[in-house]
Image 1: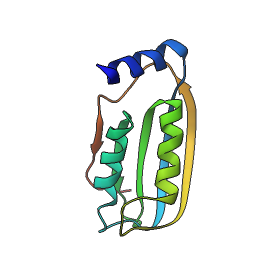
Image 2 (image 1 turned 60 degrees about the vertical axis):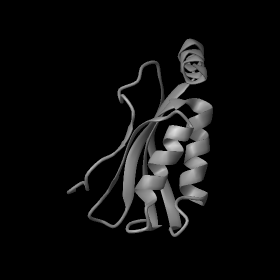
Image 3 (image 1 turned 120 degrees about the vertical axis):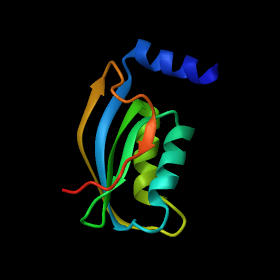
Length: 112
């Protein structure tokens, strides 16, 4: 009930964002994707996270602007307990009116 109210308010106020991210450092083999998914769900965000062949983790976030900003901070400064984030990059950040993701998921490794 409370989640639906928050999401409805974000859409009504036009305060939803979408952003792509990539996180560098010791972020693979340390449950970074699992913790990212749990944090995103806690913040009511949608999108995905996946490993890359470059030993980074990348993904996309969408949801209420304030929660997206909280998640960006979490990705750069907290992450999973055993991770060590060296840097974060964010791109294509924009305001959106509709979701394109149904939930937040862990995707298989990206082969790029």
